Amino acid sequence: MSFQDLRTISFYQYKNISEPHSLREELFSTWSALGIIGRIYVSSEGINAQLSVPNENFADFQNHVHSIFPKVPFKVALEESALPFKKLIIKVREKIVADGLNDETFDVTDVGRHLSADEFDHALEQDETIVVDMRNHYECEVGHFKKAYLPKAQTFREALPEVEEYLHGQEDKKILLYCTGGIRCEKASAYFKHKGFKDVNQLHGGIIDYARQINEEQRQSNFIGKNFVFDDRLGESVTDDVISNCHQCGNSCNTHTNCQNPGCNLLFIQCGSCKDDIGNYCSYQCRDIVQLPREEQIKIQQRQDEKGYKFYRSRQKHDLMRIAAEYREAQTRSQDLVPPSLPQ
Image 1 (cartoon, one colour):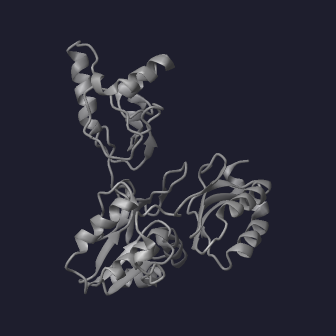
Image 2 (tube, rainbow, N blue to C red):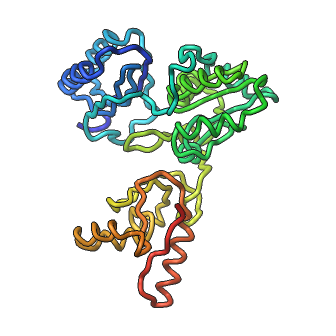
Image 3 (cartoon, rainbow, N blue to C red):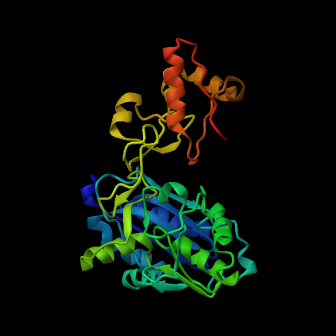
């Protein structure tokens, strides 16, 4: 089945689920039969789903979802340019979003005011408004709203205290929060209201629904660039602006990829020229290592600290330009290859 035959959507709902494991089995059985692929998290507090549904089965899927989660809205992908998922994965987790918060210490239902795209844009124009991106650094890098504070955090759990520190002393200001689809702002807005912020607002439906609304109304977007998404596409263009740079050469680029060294898997931005030069690798070192027998690769991973090799499986931003330059310099000096250590 090609991506043209699918409709990619996302939805979430906070709802008490007494038996999440039983719900997981029901969803997997029903959705597998409908040919659905995607990534879904279920917990006792609700559901968080990103999936692709065959067009011919969409009505059956929608009826099934609404029988369990009445009136839950679907957010439809902006682009259908590639197959977003390889298979159906449904996992039971403690929380549908990992936030590190103790929900018993505050009212998680006391959320911020939901703003439409038009209301959000109007509030954005006010001088005293504070706009905060509740996403991670690698999401913000390729696209964000004008005037927004962009966290340096790698995870939502890390972003919450960082944003709280940034907002300290501005409890009376109008706060605008936004994220990809709205789910992170549900918890963040309730948390910040609990912390004493009096005028907390959030973009209803997140960037995904904002883009849909401005496209339908044919008006200018205050979100610039690409919306990072957590599937194999890794992004959807909201505007044609490219606001980020290749991590390996510095040229204008907004294409994320993962290092193909299975011991690394670093998420980074890579342009076409660097891909032609290095391949789908974050460094020459990772490119060279995968040419070795698998047994030798495993040995290198096990002794990486003493030999200077570094493997990450992370989304931390590293200075890949420096690493490449050091490698090339070492090659021109005809020295033995000893990969430079990377910052932790």
